[in-house]
Image 1 (cartoon, rainbow, N blue to C red):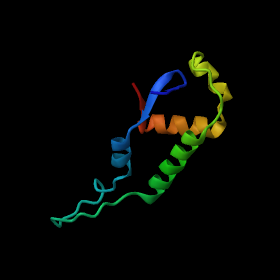
Image 2: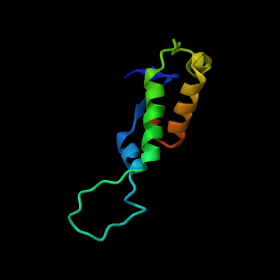
Image 3: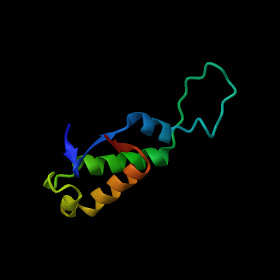
Image 4: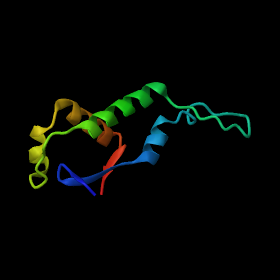
Length: 92
């Protein structure tokens, strides 16, 4: 596992699925419906935030942990903090 900012983080795919799902707000009366509804705005934003995090290529010293985060870009910091706050990424 790769360390990020001194911790082991992972993308919680189940939590992302729950976050994007709109079934809680639109209950269906029909049985046997296999349609999945997602919030398109949330989907595009989560997609963009994950792209920013996964494409960051700043050199970080894992021994410094959070102190080395000054080398990261502002978009990375915002994307990382947003996804962490929404519990879409977690650490072990």
